[in-house]
Image (cartoon, rainbow, N blue to C red):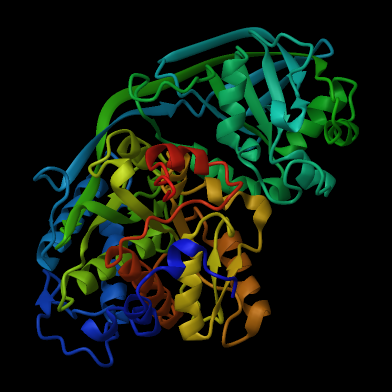
Amino acid sequence: MRHAPALFRTLPLALLALCACTPGGDRQSATSETAAPAEAATVASGHAFNDAIDAGDFAEHVQQLASDAFGGRGPGTPGEDKTVDYLKAQFARIGLQPGNGGDWFQTVPMVETTADEATALNLTVAGAPQVLKFGSDMVVGTRTGQAQVSIKDSPLVFVGYGVDAPEQQWNDYAGIDVKGKTVVMLVNDPGFHANDARLFDGKRMTYYGRWTYKFEEAARKGAAAALIIHDTEGASYGWDVVRNSWSGPQYDLPAKDDPAPRVPAQGWITGEAASALFKAAGQDLAKLRSAANKRGFKPVPLDATLSMELASRSVEKSSRNVIGLLPGSETPDEAIVYMAHWDHLGTHEGEAGDNIYNGAVDNATGVAAILELAEAFRKSKTPPKRSILFLAVTLEESGLLGSKYYVAHPVVPLDKTVAVINLDALAPVGKARDITVVGQGSSELESVLETVLDSQQRKAVGETNTAAGYYFRSDHFNFAKAGVPALYVDSGTDLLEGGQAAGDAAGKDYTDNRYHKPGDQYDAATWRLDGIVQDVETVYAVGDVLVNGDAWPNWNAGNPFKAARDKQRPAAPASP
C-alpha cells in the first residue's frame, strides 16, 4: 500500500477503524449473514428487503430493472417511466428524502433524433461512384436537431487522428482549411497504434482518443462531416457495438443547454470500407496510418468527394435523473454522491429476433448497488454526519448527458460536494483478490480505498485495457472535469476461482457476446453475486469514512482536474 497523503493521515483513528469492519462498522453489520432484518420491507413483487447489503436484494433489483417489461430502459420511452417510478418507490421505501428541492426527479431536456437508415454515403472516388450503406458499411447521424442535412460534393481529407493538442506539439489539421469538407480520421491515440509510450500516454487512451472529442474538434474546424475509421482493437469493441449503438434514436441536450460545437453529420465507417475507399483514391491506408503516428504529420486530401441526403426525425423530449437524499446530522450542506446511470439502449423496433437491450450488467448492476448502499446507510443505527446523495442519471449511453446536465445544475453545490463514487457495469463473476480503479492514480480517494482493501486482504489495480478509455466513458467524468474528486471502481479480475486468466476470459466473453447486445440479461444460473456484494461493501466503507469525517480529498498533484478543485476550495493559508 502507498502511504496515505497527509489529508487522510489526519483522520481520527476511530474513524479509520471503520474501514476494517464490514460496511457500517460497529454501528451495524451490513452483511446478510449477520444482520437481523428488523425493518425488512416488501415491494409489489413480494420480495422482502433486508437492511443490509444483500445478494438476494441486489438480484431482485437487477431482475426488475433488466426485465423485458422495462423495455431496455430507453430514455423517453415507457421503459423510462417504469424505471424512474421504480427508483422513486425504492428510495421512498428505504426512507430517503426527495433530493431535488422536494422532488425526486431532475428533468433533463433532450432532443431525440432518429436517422433514416436508408441513408447512403454517395462517394465519387477518382471519378468513379461508390456507395456506402447504413449498418453494413457505415453509420451516420446528426446531433444538430436538423430534420434534413444535405451535403453535396464535399472533398474528403484524411486528418490522422483528428487531434489538435498544442501541449503535445500535435496538430492533425496543420496547414489545411477543412471548412465544408469531410474529415476522415482514426480512432484512439497515436501512442496506441504506434505502441510508443512517448506519444500522448502510449497505450493508455487520453481524451483526445475518444470519438466525442474527435467530432467536437471537427466541428470547431468547420467540417461538413466527420467519419471515424473503426478498428476493433483501437475502439475496444467490434463493429456490431458501433452499429447497435448508433442505430435507432440518438439523444442530445438542446443546444441552449450544451453549447459544445456540433458537426452537421458524423459517423463511423468500417475498416474494410475505409481500406477500399483509400485504395480507390490511390492511397494506402496502412501507410497513412503509420505516417499519422508521427509528429509533424500533415493532412492528406483524398481524390474523393461525398454527397449525402440525411433525413432525420427530431423530437424535443425530456428525461429524468432520479435523486434521493439522506441528510447529514451535523454538516448537511456537505455531501458525497453515489452515482449510477439507469438508462440503456431500449428496444430496437423492426430488428429481427430479440430486440430488447435489457442492460442487466450495464447498468442495472450499478443502480442496484446504489439502492443497496442507500438501504444500508439509511438503516444504520447512527446517521451520517455529512449528507449522501444517491443519484441515478439518465442518458449515459448518449454521451453522459444526464450527469452533464446535473453538473451544470447541481443540487449540492460542487464546492460542497466532497466526492463522487461511480458504479457502472459490475461483473457477476464471483469474488476477486483485487478491485479495479479506472484511472488509477488520479485522486486521494484511492488512499481511503486502499485502507479498506488492506482490511480485506485485497488490492487496488488499474484497468487492464487502458486503451479503451473507460475513464472518459462513464458519468464521473463530468464531475471530474468540474473539479470534484471522483472514484470509479469496477469489479476485480484476479478471481479466487481461476485467477487472472478466468477474470480476463470473463471480461472478454462479456465484451464479445453481451456488451451493448440483447444478450446482456440477468441469468440466475450463472451469475455469481458474492464478489459484487463485497465490492459494494467496499465502497460503503469508503463513503463511511468520508461522510463521518471532515476531510476534503483532492486530486493528486499533476492531475489535470486539480486546478478546478483548487479554485473551488482554495487551500487554507499557512499558520504564521
